[in-house]
Image (cartoon, rainbow, N blue to C red; front, top):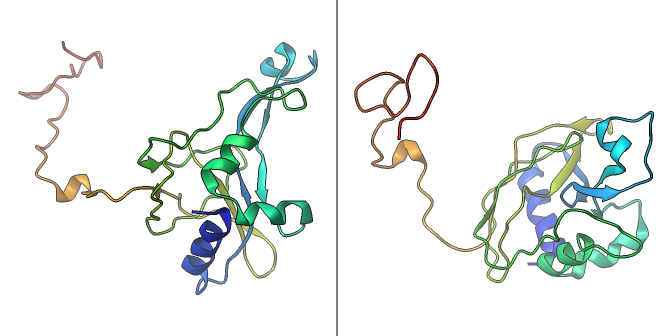
Length: 183
């Protein structure tokens, strides 16, 4: 799936809500920065945070990203280079089934129906979808879960899973008084 196809699916999902997709960002990653003695604990150590912009209609240079496969694009944008001294490992979508949402401090994520991709899968916390209303106000919605391969998904409530016993009850692995797991 290309970034453009993902963008279209998100827009389709929200077409009747009055919300507009205004940007898509990659996952938040740690990056080397100059040490800042006046900053927070990470900044004092020379660690910052960054998230690559994948789509934004106001940044014309990102338009070419829409035709690129999502896995290839994320791998490129999240790989360390001389100009991008990233500390976190690159995001490689190969071999993953689902992508659960991340909650970076600036995340405005959208919930959408499960999306299917045959060749890419997910191993990280997710993409950030920025949505806004008709007055250009950012809107926080539910999270996005991307399904990258076909598999039967059964919610816990619909499964035949045994009920989870309350702490301290017979069959419980948790002690109620100290919140410790029994071995």
